Length: 310
Image (tube, rainbow, N blue to C red; front, side, top):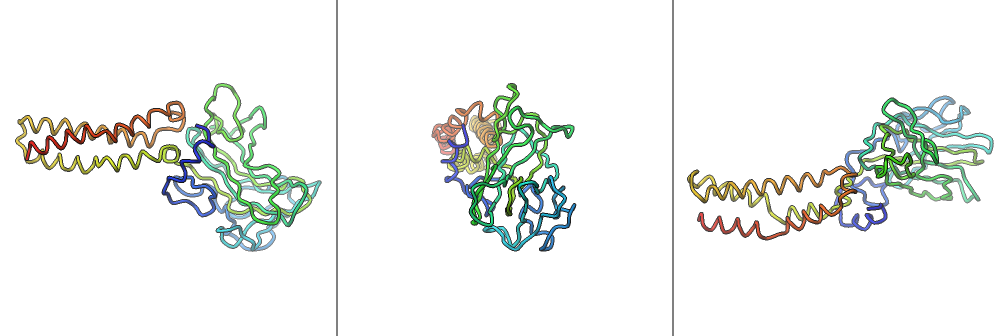
């Protein structure tokens, strides 16, 4: 399923989402980017050769064109970073290496604005991929760099950008799209850059989050599991089993039904944790499991057993 097809399912989710998200991606854990909103560190110009706390190094320029200013994006505190460049020079930030799992899903996001309207800009937000040995992962089209947005031109108002990153479904062809995670990638380095544009760009709320792809793609599975009342039925069966002589037919039936319920519940929980690539390869399995959870036959067998035991 392509990202555009999955977005309709997002409205069904109830999850704790960082305020900066324009779309309700369910995420696992917090922001993997340290000081992505530039709240750590004092206001003012960043000295040449230095970077804000949590960042790795300045990109392309040592002219001290970075500054922390009090002009935050919506919901991102009070500070942001300003990057000033010229048509002959660039400035920006590279983050430290962040370990990732190429079989999972992530979203990279951030807010960008300019001092005003412009015909073009050099404001870019993206990342560089690295392999297990720290080597740069080269891609045929854009080498190791891919973009959330390139040449962003939001004008004077803050604009939110994001990109959902999914595992490469065809790792053997040697190419990945910009929104796919190369199969050999084991880490990435976030970067924000004003590339040879004669003006100032502002970045804030830079985020990288692991996305709970299972919950996004199959929100109905949790509802189906809860609606099946499997835990409550298992509790009743255990209480009934405790009251029956161990060697009776009813006890045997209760044990068999308990095993069936435990197996069904385990399958549902395993489905919710299925790896992204496995789900992408077999999208029919979840609907079949949900149908089984909703099937009343197992519930009828339990009620019959409880009536007989009573």
